[in-house]
Length: 598
Ligand SMILES: Nc1ncnc2c1ncn2[C@@H]1O[C@H](COP(=O)(O)OP(=O)(O)OP(=O)(O)O)[C@@H](O)[C@H]1O
Image 1 (tube, rainbow, N blue to C red):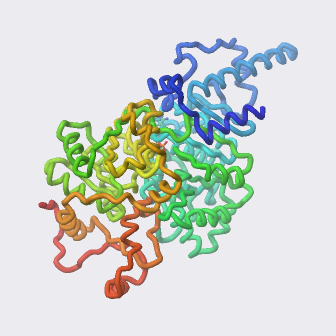
Image 2: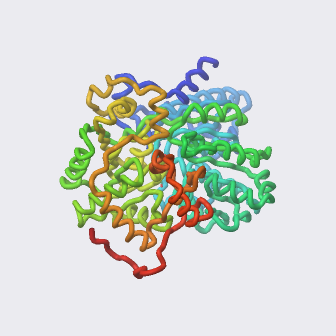
Image 3: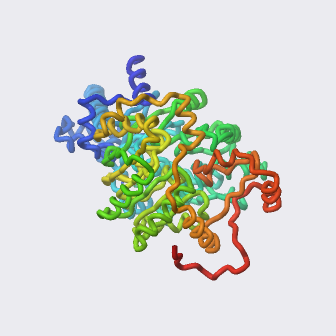
């Protein structure tokens, strides 16, 4: 038992190192990480159970989630019943093991519930089932097969599954089911997302799946806290400020059924941009310490930080890992290309766009200034191409509008920063381009995971220059481990030292600008007038809220420089609080700027 547990925890927390044999096995058919696979589908039919055996299994535990779809019980003689029961228990165990193996479901913990196979097995209400099928949710993905029964067991859970594999529904469904089965008027669940954009996205999922269901849910950003809702989706920052303004809310937090952390490793992140974030989480957990409150953590990537925290603080935690931990989505074909210099990257991107691509595509850059520069550059290179830009300085309303345009393929190219590197579900995206090298493996996995979602195929191109050589090896290794070719020398380069990695997290890689700064400044002025851009005003010692930036912190170095007495005085006069405010010049504001000529 001890060895078994050791193996599982190794898989969960250190991942399975790929060797030549298992590399081929996974890369040639990545679909098994996404779609449910049953033994029959593997070409090896499961040992057929006798009808009676099946019936016995089905009736062995009325309340448990059933592994097999319904059939009626038959009465058996007591002695035969015992023998049958053992037989069936063995058969069931064998089947569960096989299903887990085929779907790469690794679990760890005591008394892990069996995975389920069909949504009707969960005894969902017909309306709920109908809502699911209306949005093409016909069969569960592996993470849903295992996480849902565990959450229905009402226990703390730590779940890791690849990007785009349906983690959101894995935690939404049990919450909805439990509220339908046992309607409660009180606040029952809080879902925390690292950014406002993601919180809105999860809220939209509730809108979809809760049609005609008596569930009260809310997306909270500011204003009055919707404490009469059963489910609230928000960010840690917003929750804290709500509770700190109204201490009476603490009482409501004590009786929560669930506190769910999506993208949980991001919430535990301790980068400069998220300083004090864990402290804030600590605060939230202190409020949510009711005996009935269960905690769930979901993410595509997990750090040891999260693991340690969970082991220390969670009760009887069940852990799940789908596939290999911290690996990139093998449904996405991945390329690593040496572009030489910044101008080399521009030429390469022009080439990709000129040769034709299947839109929409997402291009990631390292900060908002570079996003702006690339935006103005590509707009002048391809004036007819619908190109948009999302960074922390774009207003919330505009961000939502642009994301919707990408979803319905009205926007062909989206240039963005780390702000939407995680969690954003844009199923139509076919191509991800890392114009600037991601600063970590985790960032790479999430960025690339914006394509190849829900079982679809995708493509990702990552460019690097001479400047990136000292950081490239970990990214090259991840791509190689996913089964794709990389320039062989990238795997032989020195690994970046811990110090270098840390430096990379707190300081951006210094890169040359690419000659269109002025154009971008001009566009920005128009966008500001059009209320599409807000200005980030930073007052000494205060950081932007991470839920607004998603780590898209710009010009850290620049901000650390003293800004001079005169300028400081000007800034102080401009604002009293360090807030993100839309800067709209009231004078001479044209009604709406429809197009911008550059
Ligand atoms: N069982 C299912 N069948 C078909 N599609 C599904 C199923 N479950 C989820 N999806 C769809 O898959 C897409 C990705 O789901 P989701 O956003 O939950 O992924 P995720 O695992 O949270 O990814 P990320 O790690 O990037 O946040 C969504 O468009 C969702 O509607």
